[in-house]
Amino acid sequence: MSNTVETLALSRCFGDITAVDGVSLAVRPGEIFGLIGPNGAGKSTLIKMLTTLLPPSSGTARVAGYDVVRQPAQVRRCIGYVPQLLSADGELTGYENLLLSARLYLIPRGERKQRIGAALAMMGLSEVRDRLVRGYSGGMIRRLEIAQSTLHRPQVIFMDEPTVGLDPSGRHAVWNHVAELRRETGAALVVTTHLMDEAETLCDRIAVLHAGRIAAEGTPAELKAAVGPGATLDDAFERLTGGTIGHEGGYSDVRQTRRGTIAHS
Amino acid sequence: MTSDRPGAAPSPIPDRPPSRPIPLRVADYWTQVFAVADAEIRKLRHDPWELATRAIQPVLWLVLFGNVMARVRGLASGGIPYLDFLAPGILAQSVLFVAIFYGISAIWERDLGVLHRYMVSPAPRSALVVGKALSSSVRGLSQAIVIYVCAAVIGVKLSLDPAHFVVVVLLIVLGSGLFSTFSLIIACIVKTRERFMGIGQVLTMPIFFASNAIYPIDLMPQWLKVVSRLNPLSYEVDGLRAMMLQGGASTLGLGRDFAALTLASAIVTVIATRMYPRMTE
Ligand SMILES: Nc1ncnc2c1ncn2[C@@H]1O[C@H](COP(=O)(O)OP(=O)(O)OP(=O)(O)O)[C@@H](O)[C@H]1O
Ligand SMILES: [Mg+2]
Image (cartoon, rainbow over all chains, first blue to last red; front, side, top):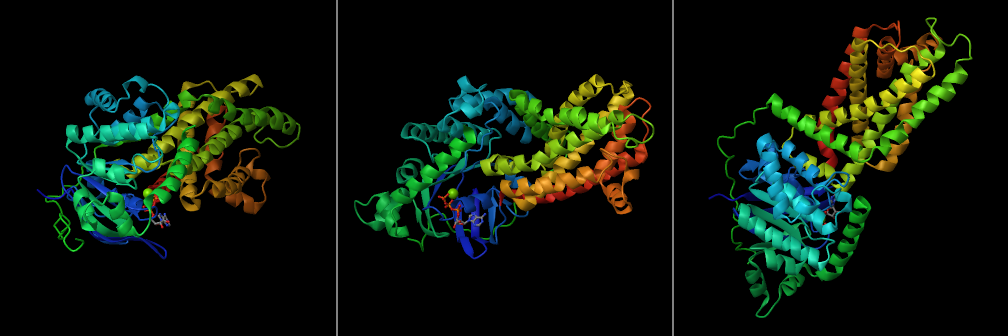
């Protein structure tokens, strides 16, 4: 079976900065693929190219067999996307947010109610469906967005830092739901994160992105083994990127939480 | 291990054959347009205060500005009282002012990430643009209700012919769509809310004053007459003046009003369809 996502020397520049620099990777059907890297590594830029939001400067990418530049409309029908920012519309209810997506994705009218109901139930949001999203917690918004990204049964879902800004319990809830999502839908998942435990818990395979390039790729066990016996994923990451992720991650968490608060309060 | 990446050996594979083009079905297109417009309308229903506060400005224009200017002799043309002359102009003005805010809300949606969700969906980009434009019409129409009531109260002789109402609605839908899409283009160019705030003022005022909204074109110096003839708002006002008032008449011709507004709308829609998707970059 062919790969769900395949990139070849994919690059993107912003002026002098090369945010993504010749990335070649493959995501297999149904797997959870982690992209880890410190702030500014190019994770979001890579995801935006794969979701047709940003044209590549060079290189090619295929998602579900379609070229992201030449066949963007086909790509869009096959993917789900959970952006880094909390993007559910705070002025609408949870149900209305999903209704908007159901219509944009042309889910047949007769199936909309049932599919929205099922998505809300899977993400544990049935009780709050008619409340304005403005009043949701960060974790609930994330789960709503995940529900939204799955409505049309995509082959692959891109999640850009799905747990950023969440407290540990919110984070664990999202992990559980993501794992269940994979069991239920069989979709491949591409998840970016800078949290080692998140990558280790969720991902089948991981690519470490550093300064726009892939520094290493493999299963969590392989990455650890490459450093030495008894090494943690943190050790592996530190070796590959020459920095401690905890420090930079902390800043990003604060920034994201603040943006989330401004957006939804 | 970097040299031997498991699973990462992408070779240039051909496009998925056969890469069938997605057939564009009219019903689907409207579902997507409606999805966008309906979401906006639901937001208004959740927060009707916004509409209420927007209604204050046109009422002030009619009651304060209108009543004072009505005393200036020779201002009204065609022998109708100045307040009658002014009411359609103020309606057109509200349509413009309300629509111009759409650019800011588009930038706001980009900053929040809401826009990204629209853009990763398979909806044709033009459907997203048209959906936004239509939702702006709803705001415009709600302004119209307020202005009709206020105008009736201050004694403007309004036409109550249902056919005229229909044409007024069409004019408002066209005008709202035109100016909101124009505003979207500006948002795509300036990209930040701060800059938009500045430029928004700079753009709306000339559109408003270089039109026939509050004084007849005949009063203008020659060069301004030319400008106002190129200004879509003049056609909006002209059409409204013919349809809103008892015995109202169009100076430019109703057919020409619609043609001008439709043409301008088509142009801005084509431009916005190209520019809007680039906002996520
Ligand atoms: N629109 C843009 N214009 C200019 N530079 C950009 C733009 N988007 C990203 N960059 C730059 O590209 C680099 C990669 O950014 P990107 O957002 O992809 O990183 P990231 O890995 O997602 O980081 P984070 O953990 O902070 O989300 C950064 O140096 C960033 O400043
Ligand atoms: Mg990022």
